[in-house]
Every structure is written in C-alpha cells, then in structure tokens.
Length: 479
Image (tube, rainbow, N blue to C red):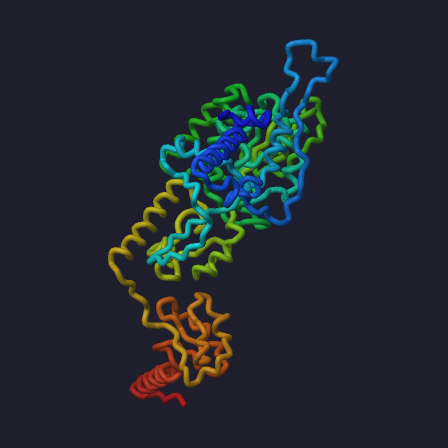
C-alpha cells in the first residue's frame, strides 16, 4: 500500500496527500472487515462536506505565480518565481474562512494548551448571570472628514494607530519606520516627522472633550522615532496644551525634550504638498501658528502622524438599550455617580469599565476594571440584591393594554401579559423613573410612594403648614 497520495493519484500538496492517506486508511479498514467501501461516506469521498458560503461574496480571480519565459530558462534561476507581496496579499483576501480542513489532526498535537476540538459546532447559549461588566472599549475617529490634514490623500499621513502598527515588530515592515510611495510600497526612513495633537479633540466642530491619552503617546512616538531612526531625525510636536498628569509623565516629557524633539505650541491648521521654497519640494508642509512667538510657520516634513480623538463605539446606543445604561452627551456610558459610584450604572448588577465610560489611559482602565470586578464579586458573595422601593406599578383593573408604556420604559422593565391583556412591571429591573406614569392614558401606571393621592396630601400638608405659620405671625392665611 502506498501511503503517499502523490504516489498513487499524481502530484499533490502535503495537505491533499494527508487527506488521501486518511481516505485510503478508511478504505483498508472497511475492506478488512468486509464492509461496504462507500456506504455512509459518499459525501466525504465526493469532497462536498464544506461549510456553506455566505451570500453576497463576489468571486475573485486567483493570483497566478510569475514564471520565467522559456527563452530565459537557460540559467540557475527558479522557473516558478512564486507570488509577489502584493499578489500574495490579494490571494490571502480571497479566503472566505469556510473552515475547510483535511482533518489531519496535526494541530491537536501542536497545541500545548489542548484548545482545539474538531468536534465542536456553533451554538447559541443563554447563560444566567448575577452581574455584567460592560467593557466594550472605544473607536478611533476617522480623520478623513478633516480634509485640511490630507489623510487618505497623502500616503505618509498616518493615524496614531497606523503608526503603532508600523512600529510593531509584527507589522508590515517588521518594526522599521519607513515611508510609503504612491503605490503603497515602503521605501526609506523619514528624516523629519510632525506629530499633530488634538485631531478632533477639544474641537467644537467635532468633540469638545479631551481624549486624555494623545499627549503621552505622541511623546512616546517622538521617543521611538529618535530611538529607531536616529537622533538626527527632526521631530516636531504641534500641541495646544501638554496634559502630562500621571505619575512620571512630566519626567518623560523632559526626557523627550532633552532628546531634541521640537515642541511647537499651536494647533496645526493644514497639511499640504504645495511647495513655495526649494526645501519644501517633495515634502509635506505643516502650516501652524506658534502661539508663543506669535508667528505663522511652514514646517516641511517627510511624515505626519495624526492623533485622532477617542470616540464612543458605533453600537454604543444599542448596547445601552440592551443593558439599561444611560448615555452621556458625548455618547459614552454614564456611571451612576461620578464620585461615589464610578463603575456602577443605573441598572443594578451592570457595571462599566474602561474607555466605554469615557477616554482614559491604561492605568485608569485597569483600576476601573478591578473596581468593577470587586463590585461584581461583592454581589455574588452577598447572594441577594437590594432594590429601591420607589418603583412603578400598574393597576391591572385600570390598565387597557395599550402597551405604550413598554416602548417608553428606558430599562425594558415592563412586559405584556397576553393572557390577562395587561402590562406588568418587573420590580427587579424598574428604577422608578416615572416615564410610564407620566404618559399612561388610562392612569393605571403609578410610582409607588408618589401616587396622586400621596402627592396631593403632601401639597395639602405644605399649605396647612404655611397657613399656620402666617396666622402665628399675625398675617393672613393663603386662600
């Protein structure tokens, strides 16, 4: 018996050979036991046991490797020269992650953590939990809308996240800081770099709040450029104010300044490639005002790094509705109290951690995550949850079943009883905001301890108190 698939059926890849070997072993197993060789495995033999392809996927042509023409094959160069980097990337994009596998099981032996299970299937599970920590993070603002900075037009205008990837050892340049040409190919290191702070932050046209982390990672970028490219590289930081508020941050600023980084106090107004002097030819020119000396500057550089604003996640409103969390003016999740309850939300048992609650750096995110975990653990160890007695209630004798209150409730605390034809309040979820009581057309919804009878009684008592005090002072009682 030939074990190699290529020896029997012709040339094949190693994966195809392994698959052919498995099919041959199965056939031998069936033959020795006198079983039918095809029964129950036709689909496997036909090679149709693939995952379903999603709709809307367009077919793309396969990338073909470059080959030497016949007249040039009289040397020691490879005839099949393989794929170029660009064609290899295009071929990789054709993958639709269908999950096709030869089931050679080699990955099981390679995985030391035993994290691979070929028998697993997709499933949707409902898990009952006592508390939830929402840590959905943030999105980085797309600076394409700020056309003055040329992002998307000039290949060497990068966002902070793109530069972080470029600087990473697993990035496209293996950690080398290189410029790009018009075709997207990386060429040589920059000789001058400008870092622009507050792109979209502290700006009434975009986001009025400070993103908090931009100043420090901009200084870190300047240090990395000096360290990797060379101290002779000119690095300019255009800033409004430097907010180095953390432990050791001010010392790092002084270190970066000592390395020769030029700090220009003034927000950059424009990035252009229009040159008016010989030294600006082939460069990106940053236009800004130095507010310390009161002069307009034109700074020619090879690379521009933008520090965009931290934004709420695109699905923040949807997540807020699901968990009954309030959203602030800036779109981030609101805590129950900024000082006394910094990780709790309006919904009991739901906590927030990290930049989903607002822009913050790593130490603050870690501290808040630990606080949220402690709150969740406290609920689990206590075993029960205290809820406020001031919650809404619906009188079933008055309710007409219009279900308007269900759509009004911001905490999804009201459900409709189909059998009785009335709405009911989930007392564990309700926060007593009074939205349903204020709008209920039949008057069935009320907030406990704030019913009409109780409110009017308080008003009567207040009027009686005022009347008594005026009579005691010799004045006239109010009518």
